[in-house]
Image (tube, rainbow, N blue to C red):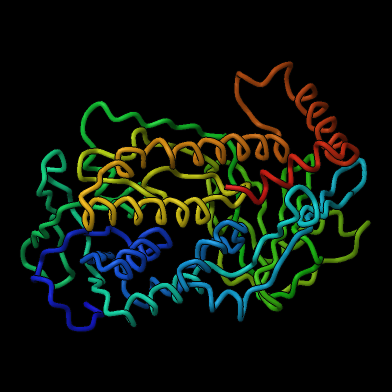
Length: 405
């Protein structure tokens, strides 16, 4: 399926073939189109699936600045809301951090990712951008030469289609064709935190006016508002447990317990309309450039969701890559492309370090590298939380890293 306006470009050919219509791919497509660069986006999902894929909704200040800079922020300014407070609930009491007033004084903008993706898609199509829906990228070939190509297959295709390109932008996630086509010798760093979450979307108003992090002996619980009537919850669960292991009532009872509703007030319940298990893990590909194949978004590195960095890193990488590709294609200057990998990896590793710290703050992490056993680790967590509650310097550090990419 194709959504497009007429284009002078040759069929099955583009200067840049963009794999994936998530935040990275659509920001990149919009920026290339605005710069006059011929591109096409290849996406295996349908238009309806692209517009409704629920993901994170916390946009960093730098992400908003990037979208503003390129005229892509109208929807989030109309319908999004600013948020700058988080609340930690523990057995030793609770405390709040007004992180939006600390550090650089910048809050998050809450705007569901599926709404942002819908905005980016409408902008891209409205500007005449080409996109092939229901089309799976199978593999990338000849990336070490000047004329790479991508093999794709549509839902109704009898055989693969060849897309010729000058560059291929892999924005198609950790399981996409871009990663599958990486050459030997590519480094893939991987770390499994050993923690799983049951992710929940509830048709229920938020129960507190903050992001809620509950540290409990039975496991972590989290509360993140999405809108006035939709709330995202997380429950730490046993690794390997199916998403339907608990009934809705059992889930709400467990959330009440871990979030200490008896002490802080009951949660506002509603129908649980979505659930899924997430194993907290992260990875990073090095380098991000392999000749004419460049990686961005989750294809460049998967972020564990504890600190909401994934979409924000994707938008940042897309802007950097768009500028580099424009320099190369419009001006014959490859300097920015040569720097792309190092520049973006600097941001990715900084985000990984904070996510790793945040994951350790919220969970009793398993593994042989845990010093002193569970009681020792639990005491370290209490000390870290106490420092975060009382130390202004620690709070400023947290605020800058929490919203920063």
